Image (cartoon, rainbow, N blue to C red; front, side, top):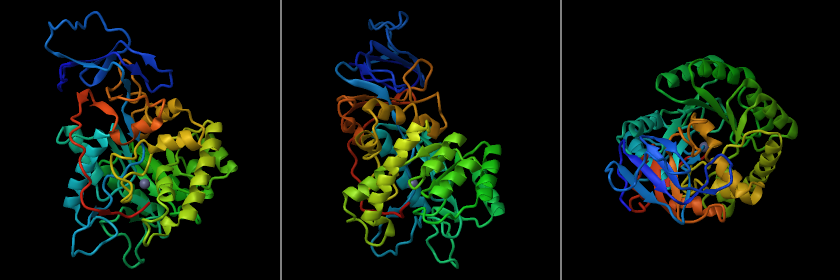
Length: 436
Ligand SMILES: [Zn+2]
């Protein structure tokens, strides 16, 4: 096997079983041909691509006995929460050093890509760190997944991330930004759009016990963001806030765990997607709350109730034809390490929510393209689509867990370029995070 290079060469992946991300059954594939950053063909090797050694601009991967599928998309990853704990320094609730935070985010992004995740949607972070990392990856300054990101979350008093007393508010280093009127929210939307966000993240209360955003406020944000070409997502665990957000026209709702059947009817009528994000809750429950020194969020009993609620919501939402996005909340806490858990949500969908492994893979590939603004352009292995491809040594349909952590990866190809999988880089010193 010749080692594939990068650039505008032709890459041919011979043999292997292809799971194309559209929901079609897996098929043996003769050749997947990549030219530049797009897939030229799948199926039989085209006559014009000769593999007799006469062309020096063709690289070949032999995927015999392996599985070829689209790169994974995690619709919920935070790159810029937290900071390395430095001895002798106080701890704030967010990153207090932007320069260090940016470098850490860039390093984390590389770990994400090396685990087979070729796109991420980032619903909130510090400053415009994620915009910067996104653009650096686009420019080729560093290797990482495609990044589709929001800025700081728009919140009111009592929303999640309003962690300081009112006389402190939300300092520059926090992931929330207080806006206590529709006018303030619109100004913040304009500021964030000026700085290049792909979407605006709003956030209601942490647990959904109270509703902290009014319908007119959400509608004002949606109107302003959409007019400027940005979309809107909202952290909403409550039933009333979920229904309100759907009726106000947001593009997707994150969590929705306390939604009633009537609330889900409203979501279905509005045609809004739900991003349940069960992985974070499952991790808290599985870890038995041993991480939670000071966070009310770490009440394991409460987390279990939220997880059970989400499983019910996913089943009910699917029955109504609501699109279920697939994300993990990686990077929101110390026990959500980059590159490790991005495919755990698929395992949860299969284990608890009645998805087949193939349906879970579609949710995290072709289906999730919506969450990164590339619907119909990425996440499916077809001629003309962006060439984001992973090749696995084990069958993910036989055991969906082989997608986790990148441990069974043979190759990762993003935007037509082969990724250097490197050594399995170790996490640095423990990192403190605030929690969504
Ligand atoms: Zn989150």
